[in-house]
Structure formats: structure tokens, C-alpha cells
Image (cartoon, rainbow, N blue to C red; front, side, top):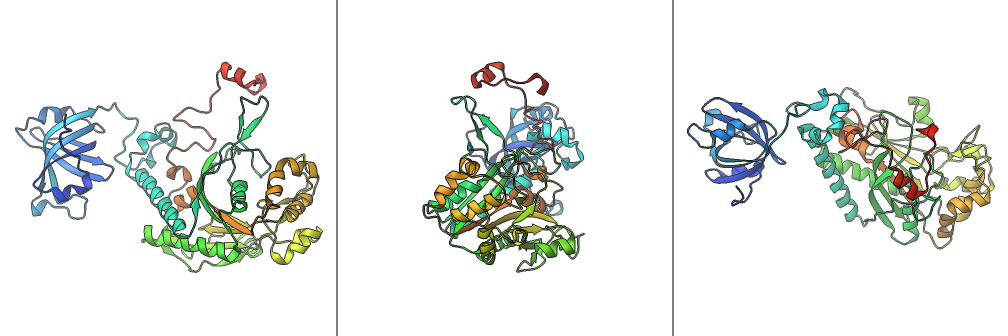
Length: 476
């Protein structure tokens, strides 16, 4: 066993020239030249070339090894002759003279090669064997950059007085736009938890609790119909702040986005700083949507055109309500917890000029994609009740679905506002990927299937009996 030596990571080998060391990792390339066998080894830090020289006792094991074998290698780090150095490559000035090799695990024939970009492989195959796809350089870089961006966000928000708080995954089903995933409660037959579409209510309750500055890298779950670039579970960068106005929230988030780009993506250029601000009405009139692509050169993948879209209408007309609990002609454009712009609060309270009420909503767009959105919230219970009244909810339904929020707001809740970023979508754009599945470690298909774990699947009758659930045959 080659464990009597301390493992050296491959990116540190240049500091051990003329020393005998131990590396552990995978075989990326094997080239058998008869008397000598060359390898490219890799670990999480990079690549190095190694060679078994003629007459070395390791030659027999070297000839057995195939690509993607997991190995431990004892060797001497030699500097290459000047004429053979490739100084532009990692470890291009050194070579590992292999003295001993131990096979830690053999590898069966893989479903596809990972030496090239796996984008050329069928996505169905890649999702089925995602743990193989994740070994490829491009996907590894995506996941590692995702970590770096998340860490920078955590550090920056911590420096600005935020604390990270985890909110529950088992919660209550309330009408918030999309369908909830529901979880049967075994101890309470006929009752169900809901998985959160977002931490919206909890983060506002944290403002009631006096946390003042909260953030979370949060899992959100929505039971939506099949859509190519959506996932049933996705990640939000979620934050909420007390005693702020719209400009304060926007400035903090703009500064954070600029910091991400300048520190982690220096090859990219932000087209305009400060980010331009466009009203919803102007965006629709000029660009036909509320997430305009303002790039001056749309062929430049490293050009980032951020912009804020503001002055959204609070309500929009609905001919037939999707919710049987309402009888109104209006629904919210973003979420019911937004506050109107201060000059329109009187209209809201009097339920007049409803179509002209503007909300404090602000969306952030990047290169034609919405990557985030938020608002200043209705922290007064009477104002929140008016929103539900305009939407046609009767008082009983309001108390049933949102009574806990109204009660909390009546207990001394400060003014507050926040935002949530679509983290997967942001990473997709920063990494120049065509869809969010390329930046999610274990994504599902556009139809919500996990091909690797083969889910969703029926559960056993025993579990159904425990939950007192009966499956209708017509639904099978």
C-alpha cells in the first residue's frame, strides 16, 4: 500500500522537483510505447504527465491500466529539458518518473469519453451518467465556479451585516403563483405539507423577528409543467433587509454583481456602470418584453449588459380566476406581498385606480434574461388585506392562508424589502452555457425526470397504506 507517504496534490508538484512524492487520482490518458508507458494523471487540482521508464518493475502494472482507473503513484519529480518544456501548460516544465503504481479501483468501459467536451454526447446519456459527465473539464469548471461565486456572495453579505438563516422545507401550501409540491403527513392522515416555492413568507417573518439582514442560498421547488429551461428544484440567492428603500436594495445588489464579475470573471466586460434603469412601460414599448437585451454587440459572449426594470403595474386584469377562492377581476403581477409605490398607497387603500397602481418591484435583467427580482414589501397588515380584497379573496380565505402573516405584521414589523436571484440562470450566463442544466450538479430533464436515479417512480403499497393514500387507476 502506497500510504506511507503524504499525498501531494498535482498543482503543487512544481515545488517538489528532485523529490520522491505520492499522487492519487485518475488516469486521463495512457500511451503504451512498448518499453515505456506514458500517462496523464489528474486530480481535483489539475494534470501531470508521468512515464514508466524501461527496466522499471512498474511496467507490468502500467500495461494493465486503462483510462479512468483510480491509482496511487509514487514517483520522482523531474524537470524537463528546456527543449521539451511547455511553459504555457500546467506542469509543462516537469515530468513524473513513475517508480511504483497501485491500482485503487479498476474502471469498466465508460458510456462515453470525457477527454473531449461532453457537449457532443447525447444529453440523455449524460444525465443518466451524470457522475461521469461531472468528471469532464468543462463541467468541473462550472461546478467549481459555482462554488466560488457562492462563497464570494456569502463573504460579501457577511461583511455587510447579513446573517445566513435556513428556513423550513416542510411548510404550508398557499397560493403564490405556481403549483406546490406536497408531502403527505403520515401522523396527520389527509393533511399535507408543501415544499416552498421560495422562502418569501419566512424571510419576511425574519424581519418581524428583528433579524434585519437575512440571506440564504435557498432551494426552491415548483411543480410546473414541462419547460425546457426550468427545473422543478432550483437555487435562489435570497435576501431581505429592514429599514430600506428601493434604491438601497438595488445599490447593494448592483455592487455585489459588479464584484462577482470583476473578481471572478475579469475577462468579461460590464457594458454600463451604474446599471441603466428602464421602466416597465418603456421596456415593453422599445423591446417587447420586460427583460431587454441591451448588448451593443450580441456576438460578444463576454459582454454583460445588466439593467434594472422598475415601475411595474401592481395588478393586471384576469378574465377567469385560476383560483376558485377568488371572485375578483385582478391578480398580482409578481407577488401579493409587494408594497405600492408610496404615492399610490392611497389608491390601494381606497381600492381606486387599480390598473394605474405601480408597485415597488424591481427586476434585474442580464443579456435578455431575468436573473432576479424583488420589491419593498407591504409591512402593514391593513395594506396587505387591501391587496387580497382587490384580488377578490374573502376574509375567511385570507385568514386561512395568510392569517399568520397578518398577525405577525401587527406585532411590530419594520419596513423591509428584498430580492431573490436565480442562481442557476446567473451561472449559466457567466459560464457561457446554453442552459441551466450545464451548471447544476445533478439536474433533471425539462420534463422533470431524474434519469440517473430513475425518478419519479411509484412507491410501494405498504407506504401508501401508511399514508392512507389511494391511487386512482385512471391516473396510472
